[in-house]
Image 1 (cartoon, one colour):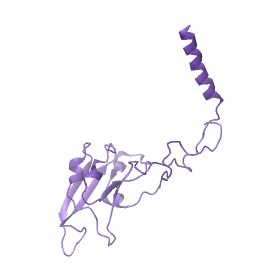
Image 2 (cartoon, helix red, strand yellow):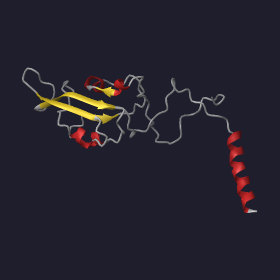
Image 3 (cartoon, one colour):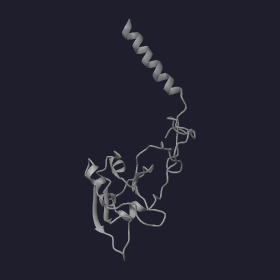
Image 4 (cartoon, helix red, strand yellow):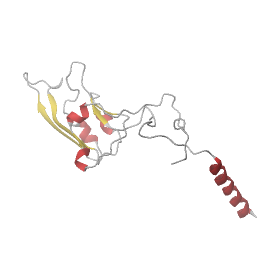
Length: 164
């Protein structure tokens, strides 16, 4: 008798889901907001005066468990002042196909030069496009994603539709 009761409970759950109206979110036009602590695309930052915050210390590369960050430092000169420190990152690359978005690079940086932003649209057609260089990382992401303000877990209100 117990198995039949459990089976009926399972059918009740299935029937309840079948009677719900499907939720359709028009993805490319309406993006699902992310939480403020979401870890997405990396970004390098500049000071207000235009100097780079990254001083090429390679602490982010040392902290990365996936070994996807490459930093090659060079000395600042009086003619070529790039960062506020003695050195700057001449080459700063992140292989996004290897990144596990753990945030260790962000935590390891003593200058808050690198952060993980809320952008999650990172797909590319070629693998070489997933190696972000310094210029790409300094620029804001072209496809901004909204942040959730209320801290709720529920997705945004459905737009209705046929479920597909």
